[in-house]
Structures are given as structure tokens and as C-alpha cells.
View 1 (cartoon, rainbow, N blue to C red):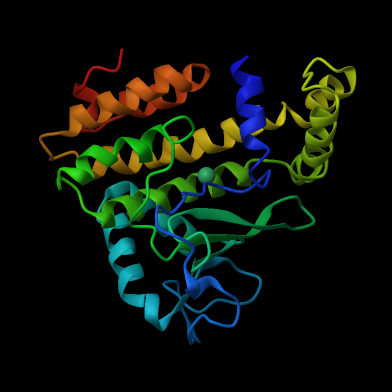
View 2: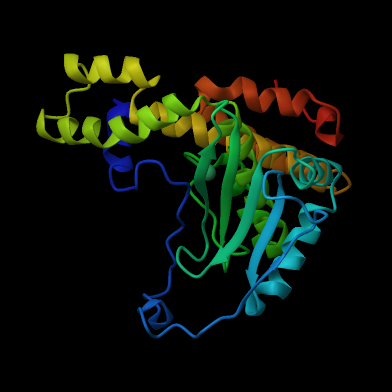
Length: 290
Ligand SMILES: [Zn+2]
């Protein structure tokens, strides 16, 4: 029952994108094509200059977004896990990870533009952060980690920079996961998810339709399951970042208690991956997960 409800919910999303947060304010005129202010773009790379065939991080950030981006990145790099993951991609032998900021989906973030080489290795991915990624908390149903920050931000125990850095960690989680996904499977999912959704909408929402059962088998789950699995990997990485970031904060067990509550309520099937983070070395090891 829940699967069907969430499947219906998901149909409003672009099937394979990351999260959106709905701004509480009215549509902003700045988003009207032609009305947005021109922005110059500059690319700053943290990695040493590399040949076109080698990997690294390419930061494509407009001048107007540089200050906020550097603050978010600084927050991400203030943790051991953030620095380790950044270094891994900055010196990656093949993968070019582009990071950019967009005015569309201002409080959200997404990862895409994946490319694989002939050996089947991921060689390109782009993380796009909303220009207001330091605001907006996605739903606890799919985002138990990011959502859990909300009361702590309201109480001014953490700032927007931590939220933005948590979103960076979530997106890095996607990159790590997709690097382990075979390209043919990813392509099959991109191809079949819209077909699945179309049939689902026309067959009276019957997930037991043999055509849907067959499709789900081929692509490794129905669209909800694929979506959930992907998002919860992002969230598990976001949790790793927070594990380090709030280690010295008095509220760290309260924060993880809130994450645990949301995971138990909405992501029971995926609890193990969050429990693994909770059991790994760090301050939250001492909080009770079980
Ligand atoms: Zn995501």
C-alpha cells in the first residue's frame, strides 16, 4: 500500500533526479527566462592541472556564487570524511567530477551527466547545488538525515552552511554509488522508468501487472525501490559527514536519535546502511542506535 502511494507521489518527480525542495515563497521573477542577471563563470580547480584524460574536481562557479560556495565547501572540508572524499575525487585517475551552482531548484541539489568509458568505468559526473542550498529541508520520508537538521537549525544550533555541506555529502554519496553501477543497468533504468510509470498510470495502478513485474525484475526494482535505494545511499553518506561534523556538539545524540526515528518509520528496509554508519568510529558510536 505504501509502495503504491509513494509510487504515485514519485510520478510527479523527474524519475531519476535528486531532491527538490519547494520554496515557500512565490515563484521568483529571477527565474523567468531572459530576466536572470548575467553571470560570469569561472572554473577553479582544486586539483593540479591535469591532462584531458585524467580525472579531478572541476568547480564551475559563477562569481556571484563564489563566496557562498567557498563557505559550504569549507564546512564540508572541516571534517575528516569530507577531506578524505574530496581528496579522493581531486586526485582521481579517471573521473572528472564537476561541481556547479544553479539558480533553478534553488534549495535542492542533484547529480547527473554521467559518462562511462569503454571499460565501463565512470569518467564524468556533475553535482549541481541550488544557489540557496543552505536553506530548505527535504521530506523525512526520503531524506531522514537532511530533514533531521531542521529543528537544530531553527534552534540556531547549526547554521545553513552545515545544511549545504550535508547536501554536498548527499550528492557525493550518489557519485560513489553510481561509480559502482554498471552503465547498461543505469541506461536500462533511464529507459524503462518512464515506460513503467506510463503503464502504471493506465492499468489502474496495478503493480502486479505482469509487464511491470517483468520490467522491475530487469531493472532491479520498481521506480520507487530504485529511487529509495539511490536516495538512501546519498543519505547514508550525509550521515557520515554529520557524524564527524557534530562529534563535539552536545546535541549529537539528539540529532542521531531523530535520524533513527525517521529511518525506522520510513526506511526500515534500509536501516542497516544507516546503522553501519552509527556503528562506525565517531562520537555517535556512543549514542544508542539499537
Ligand atoms: Zn539525492
